[in-house]
Amino acid sequence: TWKALEAVVVDSVENKTWLYCADTDQIRAEAEARARELAAPYECNAAPLTPVVRHRLFINDMIVDVIERPFGYCMWSSWHPDVSPMLSSIAKGLGGRWKPRFRNWLVPVALGPELLRQLRLLAERFTQSGHQSR
Image 1 (tube, rainbow, N blue to C red):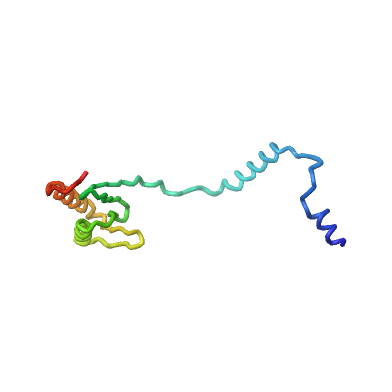
Image 2 (cartoon, rainbow, N blue to C red):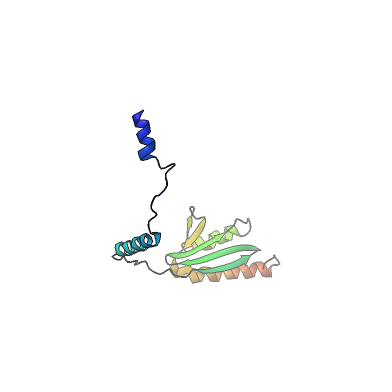
């Protein structure tokens, strides 16, 4: 049919070759200039990333990570039957809240240094009582 023939000859790109190959370097240079021209009014005003401060402690041979964030101190550890209840108690005592989405405790910024102090004391207590600790 004429429709099928038109589709193959006019619309299809198969079995076609360029009779004239345009200057690709010139096309590329024009495209880059146009892209820069369009992008010029837009500036990136993103705030610089603040470096992440991470405190890693070992309590009863278990990793406890405390990460300082602008909105609070995040405390994370895996579950341990001897240690986890103590960590929860420390966090709750400092006004911390459990964040199930991230599986960590979030302690207010003002109490972050106290959190670290209590965790270091707990790590020392486990070390002195003969439990394995790094």
